[in-house]
Structures are given as structure tokens and as C-alpha cells.
Length: 103
Image (tube, rainbow, N blue to C red; front, side, top):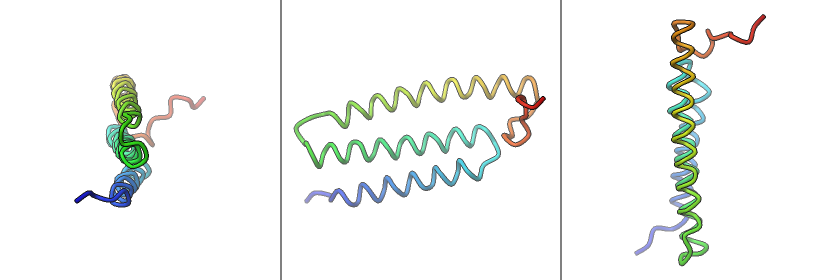
């Protein structure tokens, strides 16, 4: 018995909505980064699900998911480096308290 595509899409949409809510509500920059990772993982779920449903013999969805994982790892590394630099200069990681671009 196979799991239908709809279940994977519902799971991906739920994970994406949780990540979007977390990115919009959180003030902590690390929490925002974690929410962005959730959103990217939801995209990976959908990529692999569509690849399995549309062309089960090809691995295009899995390859795209690997690229998204690589981009997410790079994004997390750069994001954490920026957060560490902000913490060293401002002594806070709250996104609403950081105003480096103001006059």
C-alpha cells in the first residue's frame, strides 16, 4: 500500500506554514534562522514527493533536494556568522533591536 501524494503535500504545507509563522513571529535571529530551515525542509519534502509521483524512475527531485540542503547549510553558516558579528557589536540577537543601517 502506497501513501498518496496528497499526504506528502499536506505535510509539506503544514511544515512550511509552521516555518513561516516562526519567521514572522520570532524576534530572536537564531529562531528566525531555524524557521527558515523548516521552510526549506518543507520544499525538500515537496520536491521528493513530486519526483516520486511524476517520474519515479528519475532522481531529479532528490538531486534538487540535495542542492537545497547544500544551500541551506551555507545559509545557516553565513547567517550564524552574521548573528555572531551582530552580537559582538550590539550585545543582542533580537532582530528588532538591530538597527545598523540607520543614520
